[in-house]
Length: 133
Image 1 (cartoon, helix red, strand yellow):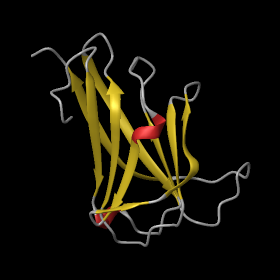
Image 2: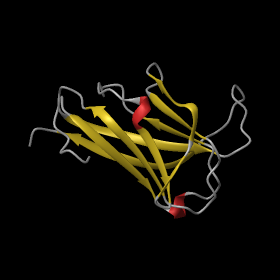
Image 3: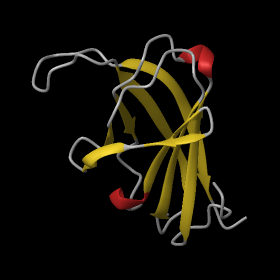
Image 4: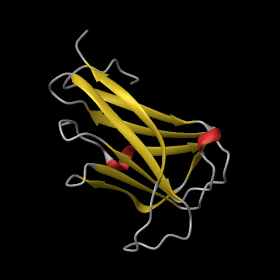
C-alpha cells in the first residue's frame, strides 16, 4: 500500500510476483479478493510491469467482475516465463471500515480459450491491512 492503507482513502496497491513463481508465460492475470472487501477499483488505472518495464494491456484489458470478486487483466502480448511481475492498482478507494484482506493472484498461459475450462496457476497471496493506525 503506497498511501498508508487508511479506511475510505485513495490508495495504490503493488502486487509483486517473483520470477521463480512464473514457471510459464502469462497471457492473463486474475486477482481475487474476499467477500468482505468493499473497496473500489479504477480499471483504467491498472498497470503491469515485467522486469520493471510497463507492458501493454488489451483494449478494455481490465475487467472488474464484482460478482466473482475478481479483477481480470488481459495482456496485449504474453509475458515470458521466469520474469518478475508487478501489478499496480492505482486510484483504489479503500473500504470505509478497516480490516485484513487476502488478495490472491493466478495467471493463465497463452492459448487459453474464453469459455473453455482452464485451471489458473496460483502465484501468490498478499495480506492487505486497512487501518487508521
